[in-house]
Each structure stands twice: as structure tokens, then as C-alpha cells.
Length: 403
Image 1 (cartoon, helix red, strand yellow):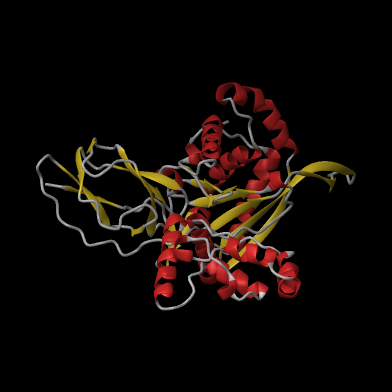
Image 2 (cartoon, rainbow, N blue to C red):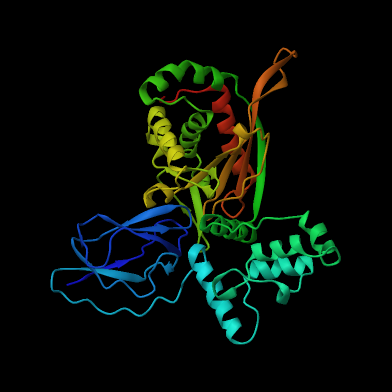
């Protein structure tokens, strides 16, 4: 019996995926767990593996590069030699991104031309409007005489002074339009949802990082020798926060379907910014892992962000999120909660600050601001303050931890 190949939910918020590239062709022999297609999810590019060994057959019409496929939709089958597969209806959800967008523009331009209207790309029409240029005077160099943005600019540069006065002035204010990646678009949508649905408030404390920095230097050589990576403040805080979360279950919780869901496992997401958008890989069971293992995982995540290629498991299941912008010189910021989680911790840079000591003297100490954003439906101010204060105390006093 043929085995269906369908797009499954790879991340917590995934609703669809865009086909980037088919790795095998119709009729190819594949083995179980062999990558057969690259998909762009809401967070990264992932490979969909074959659910069985056999022959790839019955690729759904329209399931081409650039097409968007909803979660749960079947896109092909794995069959045995001589085995027939069902015919699937054409896929109607096709993305207008990349080359597909150009095809859509060309098709729209052709229809417009057949109806007696000018064939022009939307970008060309927009520029012509900004520059006050009559498109009927512009010669198109695109397919079937389609006017491109470059054609409008070329016309403006060659126009007579009286015609070009306005275009030349406007061309000095050139702009560039950027399309959002799937990750950027969906991250933005989730952040809007978070702000609109969760009553959020923030608490900030300043932590004396003297002992934390001393511990980091003490452990640096050993960590570097074992992992090949320098110990970061982020890794140290992940370990400390993971330990503290065990004492504050409401901070390690989510709000779902009108109820509070307390998680027994501690899975900490670490927000990482890239050119393609924000990605939050997850350190699973962070409270049970030694610091060396956390360092290894964070280093592996950092390397994967260069290609934005993560496994679905690496990007899902987070119960708490940590965001550190200190390395970018940011002193303090309020992070937006990653729904349905109940809290997120924002970390600013370590900077020398005048601090009053117990003997009433003033000293310069390295301090960092920690800001906790909380979903008030799950935690109140006192509970949030208790959680944040324990993190601060551990950073300052470094009570026994399994490093």
C-alpha cells in the first residue's frame, strides 16, 4: 500500500511550509529516512525525510519550488514497483515569492497586454508614478515588451530637461524594497498576537556580575579544551536559569486554552538574530545537562544559523526563552513573550557601574540588567519578582551548581 508523504508540524507554530527544492525526482528509488525535499518553515529550512523505502510517485500537481503547502497536506507517495498511487488534486496555495513571483508578474502583465493595457511590472509602475513618467513613452525590454523598473530609470536619465526635471530630483531619493522572509513574516505575526492577547508586564533587576565573570575565567581553559569553544555569559546564564526554573514552576509554564500548563521538563530557547530573521533553538532538559554540554549545543546552534538549517526538534518544545543582546552594546530591553510561554528573560551588556558596598564605600563593579517579561495570566508581580531575584542572587553568590 502506498505511503503518503505529507507536510507535518515541525515547529510549535508552524501552519504551512514553502517548497524550496525537491532533492529527488518522480520515479527515483529512495530509502527510508532519506531527505527528499527541502522546506522553508516559519523558522528555518528543514529537510523532509522519506517515511518508507520505495519509489517516489504521484507528486501532487503544483507542488513545485516556491509553492506553499499547508500542514497535513499530502504532496506525494512512496510506492513499491508496479504499485499504483491515487491521483491528487492540484495544489492551489502557490507562493508569490522568488521565481514564482516573477512568473505571477509576467502572467499578470500578459493578461493586461491582451486587454489593451500596458505591460509593466508593479515596481516599474510604482517608480513611474513617483517620478511622474508616462509609461506609454517608455520602451519595455522585458518579455513581450514588458516594462521593467530599469526601463523607467533609463528613460528618466535620457529624458529632455523639461521632462526629466522632476524624475532627476526624485532619483536622488532612491529606495530599496525588501521582501520579508517567511521567518520574519511569521515571527512578526506571532509577536503581534503575543502583545494583543497576553497581558504583559516587565520587572528589572541589576546583577553584580563580579563572581560570574570570575567563575567564567576559572572555567574558561577547561571548557575550551573540552569543546573548542570559549565559555559565554549566555551559556552560564542558561545553566543558572534552568536550575532556578525548577523552583518556580509558573515561570516554566504556558497559557493554553484558558488554562495554565506547568511543564515538568526544562527546555530553554535561546533567541538568535540572523539576516533571515529571529530563530530560537532550544536546549532540551537544560537543568540536567552539565555546562560543557550546554556550551557545545549553543555553539552548534550558532553555526547552524549561518545556513538557517535546523532539525524540527531543535526549534520546538521550548518552555522558557532567554534573549541576550549584551554583545551588541544594549544596556536594557523588554523582550516580547514567545507564546504560549509565560515568560522571557532579556539580558543587557555587562558594564562597570558605581555600586554602594556594605561598608558604605563606592566601587566600580561589572553589572548587567536582567528584565523579565511576564504573562500576568500565569504569574503575578510577586511570583515574577521572586523568580528574578533568585536568578540575580545565584549570579552574584554562585550557590553550588553542577558545573
